[in-house]
Length: 196
Image (tube, rainbow, N blue to C red; front, side, top):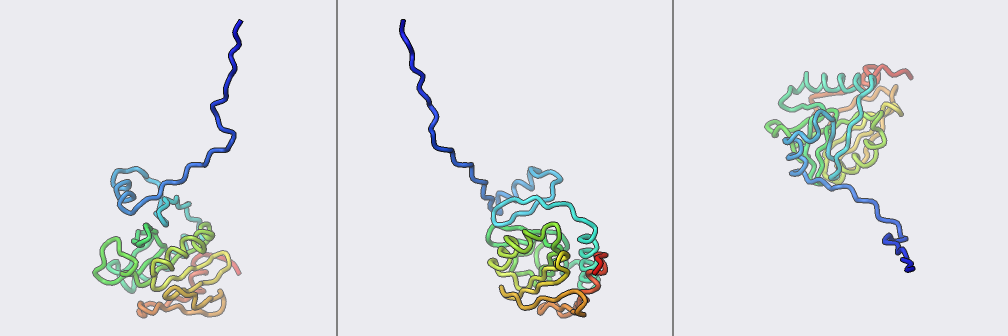
């Protein structure tokens, strides 16, 4: 009788995990046009498609207040809320509020954007981490991050943190390129219905 020896065809070393697909802006736009993402709320950050979580009530209140203020003073021709802007590093974030130059396209490039505002709460880690890095690396002129957790606003200009304003300090925010609008920071937190 003959015996057959079984030979293992698997390697003892662990296999590498597959790397995520890096999306270019063109691929992302084709996928959107083809309906790949359906009704999902996503944005492109440094070549990665990231799902956006639903907003909770404090976030909604802060965004409504800020968007309403900028739309009332500047109109829809210069203001957008939660619509895409183009970053050269294969990014297409959808900031809570953005102000852009008059005549900019519907998806303005970062060099056409005068102010970006992000409200950070459930997305705080991303807003203060990789998304902040993307904005600064790709040349955002001015960025405000309204942090609902720490109840403060961080102001970045030309890639540098220039101010941190705490709630209750009476801070009035004015963007260098958008002097027509003054934001009372305490009113933003009031609109978010946050207690001290």
